[in-house]
Image (cartoon, rainbow, N blue to C red; front, top):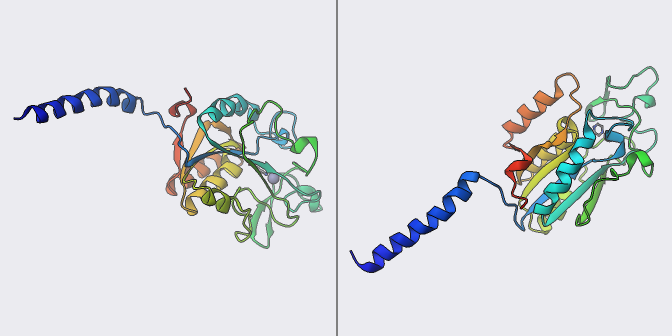
Length: 237
Ligand code: VGL
Ligand code: ZN
């Protein structure tokens, strides 16, 4: 065997000695073609808001920390008109958390929440994402809800987010925020449908869990190839 071959083997062995522990740790390192999507971390969805998600505020420090690992950050805001079609108060005799049929299908009816320009619709004050590049507002058509950051509930109207991400060469998205079983899940599943690699960071999300919706959402996301991870799986250094 020539010394060149032996040298090459020693070189490869030395490389793997370095590479293997890093791989074993299994940390994900989001690159220039990855984006963090921060869904609806607004006053309405935390304690004291109009549609509070239990412990919703606990996602804030987790997301702030994660943000250091991302070159690209997208923030969303639920941004409804007054008298929105997703509000129970728009239908005489209906109560929040009941459902109704709208032109595009079943609609859960919510308390009035995230009305455009209100303090309730503002981003949580402790969310610190100075490097975020775009804010997508959704649910601003009075007769159509939009859980997904990509496509409204009529399944026809685009928010433009897919075009924005694709134009910028983004291939992978990491979804965080509120609520796991509604806006996070719909955003993650639409991202899969649009061809992105998708991670949902479970401990950077909190759920509403209405009639088993959380388990159903994880099942549906899994079937669509969404990967469920924890914030500790991402290298934040
Ligand atoms: C959401 C219900 C109604 C969410 C928004 O952000 O998950 N849920 N509007
Ligand atoms: Zn809403």
